[in-house]
Each structure stands twice: as structure tokens, then as C-alpha cells.
Image (cartoon, rainbow, N blue to C red; front, top):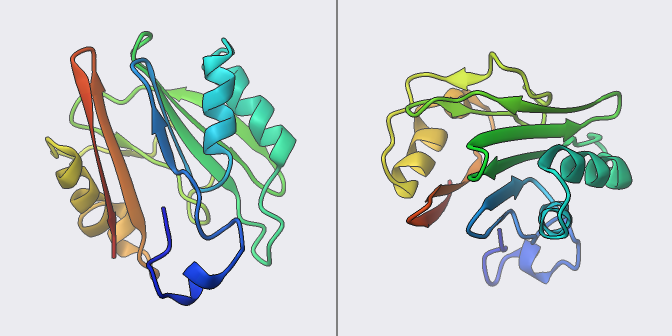
Length: 170
């Protein structure tokens, strides 16, 4: 995500304002809430298994050391294994697990309300068919629509034939 031109955030040199939140290639897609996206992706490119790439980066960087002890959260799709991984590190725990989400389902973690990945965190009313619809569902219809503060969404839909992406901020 990149701060809007002319905003106070754009004038800041804080690394927490602009970062790569979504990176992909023909096999993997990595999404996160911070500067850990690129290191996870680079570990995958170096041959690390998804679990190991996530664990090593999250342990190395730890949570955000801000006023809220913001957890670092991430998701990783491995098209070759047809598997989704969710991971997070908080002030008190580290969790990285594979998630079984079927077509028509959305798995999620959040920084504060649901910071640890759990198999129950599945949105079964998910019916988006393209990246823009995914972002719309996340921000307007899913569990995230109930949050007090608006969220941004980044989506990636990939297959052996290619990929599509979208982003949306309220």
C-alpha cells in the first residue's frame, strides 16, 4: 500500500506507512500487513518451504513494537501444493498453520480482533469471482465490515493459467 500523494502519511519517512503488501510469481503469492512480505517471498524463492519461510521471518522481525504491539500477520498461497498458509506473531505467541479453504470460502486473520490463524476463521458466504469483487466483499460484507475502523483489501486470484490482482481502501 502507498500513502495518498499530498497526505501527511506521504510526507512521513515511517516504514509503517508504505510497504509491499502483496507479492507473487507463478507459484506463490504472499500478503501481509507490513514489511515482512518481501522477506517471506525471498525465502520462498531461495527454496524454503512455506512454513519455514513464514516462521523464520516472523521470528526474526517479531511483532511491531508500537503502542498497540501490532501483530505481524501474513497469508501465503502455494499453487503447486494447492495450499493456503496463515501466520502471525503477537507479543505472546507465534502461529503458522495450513488452512483448508474450499472454493467459495475466504480464510482470514486480523491484526487485533482475530490475530491468530484458526481453522474456524472461514467466511462461508464468500462468492466473489474476481479480485475487485473479493476486495468489495472483504470491506463491505465480511467480518471486516463490522470493524470500527475501515480496512484496506488486497486480493490475488491465481491459477496455472495466470493471475489477477486488485486493491481497495475505504
